Image 1 (cartoon, helix red, strand yellow):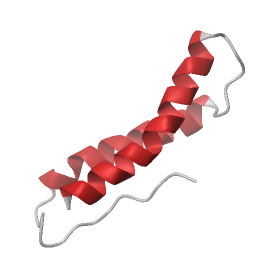
Image 2 (cartoon, one colour; image 1 turned 90 degrees about the vertical axis):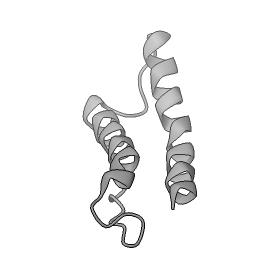
Image 3 (cartoon, helix red, strand yellow; image 1 turned 180 degrees about the horizontal axis):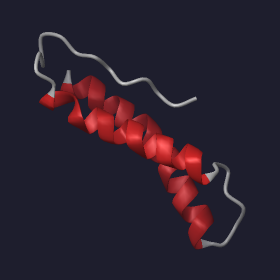
Length: 66
């Protein structure tokens, strides 16, 4: 289960890094601030998965942002 969670985090890492690079270079960002916040909230929810009461027998995966 942690491997699945880690893979979901890995898939989103590129988007986080791209956004941070764009901000640091003062370029227009691909995501607006609300989209970036939603992505970060999703990533935190993934990190919190092991804290779920039924983990690891039953997991409620957070919904990925659109």
